[in-house]
Length: 321
Image (cartoon, rainbow, N blue to C red; front, side):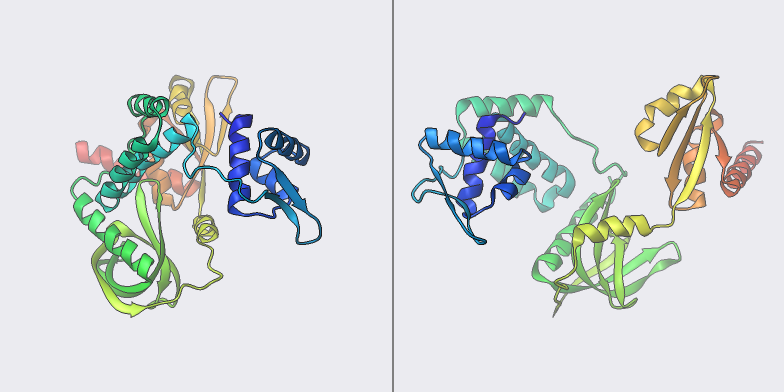
């Protein structure tokens, strides 16, 4: 929980890192009003940490020269956040950053006071995050970590890679030269984003579908106007979406409730049933999602998904006859 003392420390660090900041900018970063920022200035002055202002278009607020904080001052919650973060790094990256994460954890605990170390110990036994890599990668995990390590090096050193990439249209794979701009994780899978020389444009590749990978000596320059976060958001939006409406009868309505975060809309009906909607990348994926509930859910639309579900169900019956 953010407290006034935490904000005061954060304000000092912000001014220490970048003098001459406007009150409005500081207020926005602290998520408080400008009036509150000026009140904080008065509190700092009472604490012996005076702030002065320089007028003019290029002026702003700064600490009086000589006023600095020690390099490490954390609240218990901040210490826990850093500690839990090292666990997430291990969960996401495996051996690629495991040793660095463990080393950071030890160094952090060595410089913290007793009460904060106790808070970290409590968090490690009480606040856990697991299963982020939801896909079952037991058999390919060592290979995946090797791929991630090579791709990370390619991103860091701006070196091209040559890879054989397998997709649903080409089981034997296709050779591509690729400039890797970045890596991201979504819904249990790792992806690489960059410029594909075969397609002469930006592409996103799923890492576990890379069959062979070689780091080349050739380097590349990432376009200065390429915004990784924006690209990922737009790339996801540009994927064709199939919008599905599905009904859970009253006797299976609890299943819809358990998966509430999955639905785009959730509409309880007077008879106890629930009508939901969700998006899928294609008709087959939509049908697969619907069939996970067996006879407990009925697809209302679109007709193409209803047809696929019916055909698959008929085929399953034939298999068991």
